[in-house]
Image 1 (cartoon, rainbow, N blue to C red):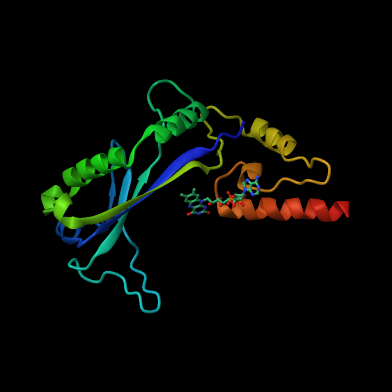
Image 2: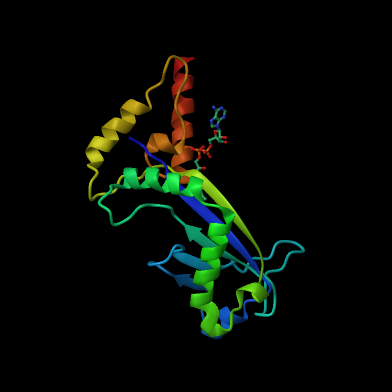
Length: 189
Ligand SMILES: Cc1cc2nc3c(=O)[nH]c(=O)nc-3n(C[C@H](O)[C@H](O)[C@H](O)COP(=O)(O)OP(=O)(O)OC[C@H]3O[C@@H](n4cnc5c(N)ncnc54)[C@H](O)[C@@H]3O)c2cc1C
């Protein structure tokens, strides 16, 4: 069964990135934490918009949160369902508390002060984010392939697109599946 993975992207608007510069990092891997990655925005300028050129400039940091229930013997499908339940029960305050805690512990040694340096936070939650991608520990790829083919069979004149139909999370798969679905309709005509 294709169980979607929940996914949360967080933007932390900061008044400066002096602490990051002082510590010599633009991205942090934090595998034991709630946010396994934190990274500064990419240095891209578009038209009148210019990226933050000096550590005194305001910038956005991107934080990732994948709600799961690890280390209690659950498979990925059960973990995604449990993670979704967890996500539905979390308040914005829960996020702010944890962002404050982890950013302070990671960046505090560089002089970061949450209340002074953070101007705002957005939390974007996708309860059904990534389509399920079979993993080799417990999924048999051959079985998944057959199941996927069965699940995306046309129903009457309705054909099935979406990245789910290709059992992978990414846009290239969604495009391939949309092309297949349209080709199936064209063949019916
Ligand atoms: C946070 C996040 C980050 C991502 N980052 C990347 C990335 O960096 N690179 C990458 O390749 N992929 C990324 N993806 C995955 C990418 O977004 C998906 O692969 C892609 O959007 C799937 O396209 P789709 O057409 O299959 O489905 P969707 O984009 O989900 O489109 C389905 C559409 O159907 C609509 N819909 C649903 N039900 C109905 C209904 N009953 N009637 C009418 N309309 C309906 C929905 O509103 C939606 O607009 C990311 C996904 C998330 C959530």
